[in-house]
Image (cartoon, rainbow, N blue to C red; front, side):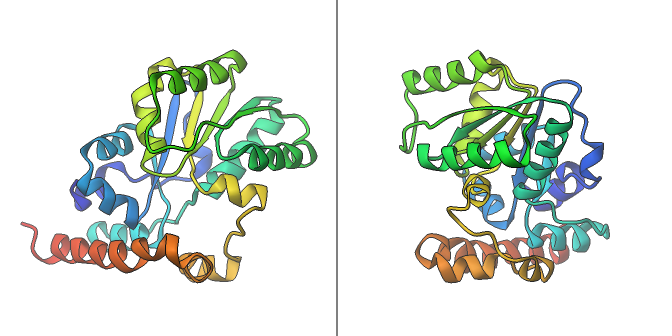
Length: 240
């Protein structure tokens, strides 16, 4: 996957209000870690780039866009698109489905939705926690979604599993908007605290999370981030 091509042709640069949702719309996010993973995983790269909207969920992507294209864009995190779509869904009395996470997390989300967005009808399904899903797993997951026929499907099964699953099953999913947002399920449920606006505005949202979860997040910060910078330097100074 070519970084210059990604920021030139695929990164979403407009405001959230301009996302067209008149037909089935698949929304993905990308950050330096997922870019580096996609460099090694062709199916993941195809899943990311085949969607309708690829949001710049990382200060590294914002920086790369500025350096390689001269364009100044804003970071749009998974939590941002989640909040935006919930507000729209509440105004339109829409149905929302959450696919992923534990039953406990989904119940916390349900409780919060009822308070904050009372006009939304919500259902959910907690798939088994495993590296890959069987045909039976996928059948149960898609059936749960399709029986409810949501306007919006949020998928939270961590990258790259969530994006690859949506990519493989998108034609069999009866939902108008499909969004892969990973850790946002835990952020919204309150089981994991998102970094404060102070760190987010500094472009350092990752830092407090790394301090809290070093064993889980060390790779993306001490391996993927430096590697991403190497890719950026190569694209800027050694690509002809």
